[in-house]
Amino acid sequence: MSNVSVVAGLSMYTEPGLVVQASARLTERVVARLGRELQSSQPVDLMQQWLNPQLLFAQTCGYPLMHSLNGKVQLIATPCYDLPGCQDNLHCSWLIVRDDDPRQSLPEFHGSVAALNGYDSNSGMNLFRYKVAPFSRDGRFFREVLLSGAHVLSLDMVAQGVADLACIDAVTFGYLQLHEPSRLRGVRILEATASSPALPLIGAITTTNDLRLSIIDAFNACLIETPLLSQILALKGFVRSSIEDYQRVLDYQQSARELGYSTLA
Image (cartoon, rainbow, N blue to C red; front, side, top):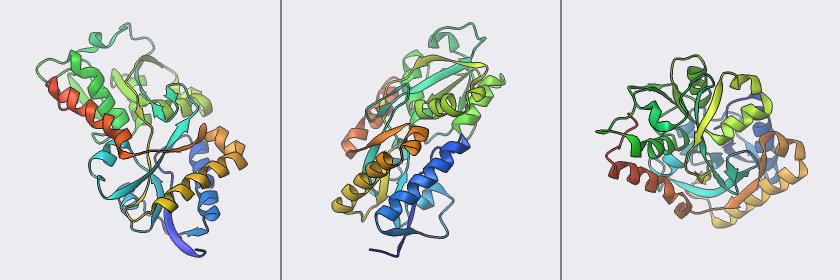
């Protein structure tokens, strides 16, 4: 299978820079171990990457996996992170507030302003919605929801006082704690959300089971061979998973809807 060019990447965690560099190096090692070559031009747009027929592997979010990507990609595995809020292949999100905000519980934030990374995010929206739903009234909890476009930008909005509350996945928050703790000045954790499987590793819909197992083995072997990359990425390894594992993403969505809170608002 040498000289077969593929699309591959671990592009979901874009900060800190050290994490981006380590993700790129790990991608290169895994691709080489599998006897492929990275295409010289990789898709910049995530959806184009995920749906590319030459996709060997990429990380996506559990929410699009169960919605826009459903039936269009092959689930390969789920990562296991060694970070606070992560256990086995699960992770939670943290509700983040300013460290000088006197409020100590979520219900006290009724009528406040939320920062949201994106409406298609499991960790930033779906887990947030599920957490907030029991305290909503007539389908609303917040006075306003501001779209930031990224978890790190949501953090900045809270720190700067533009928003009162944000829901940040434990891996993003953990990477900042590890590598750029100064980025977390001025904020604190209020509460944890429920847990769900971490960001899934996917491949093209044509990915065979044999290739799927080979990709998992290659990742785990490379992480053992390069402990520095494993340490930077706080990655213990990848485990086999199934679509059924991600059903809880839809269960959280349905629970919020049943409480009359279908949209984060």
